[in-house]
Image (cartoon, rainbow, N blue to C red; front, top):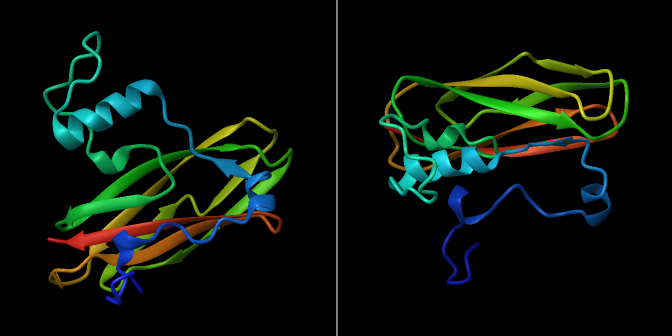
Length: 162
């Protein structure tokens, strides 16, 4: 519920409540470099924020920024989002993914399991989303979560089907 009494939508809230003790030991983190943020600005607003790094003619889509959340503003057919996580939860960590699909959107994560031998190790994965039908004209919400039995790293998925 919003402050004015209207129903809150997917763009009105984030991943959920923060749990401070869990934030101290997150398990996995998503890193994005300075250059990735510059490309994000190029893609989102066409803004060149650093004169030494020009915007490419075709910057990556904004949803490719390596953040936990995934927001696709105009899903037409299918799209594949790329993410990389870094293990900060200790050695010998094995995570599996659970997905809650937005209504009307198929979501497939691959690989479905990530195994880490050491702290600091990085692993890449893909999230393929495909519209199952026509647009409702509303943002649709789902999530994906990586869990290893100790940590649960939940991330929102927000999609507007074109």
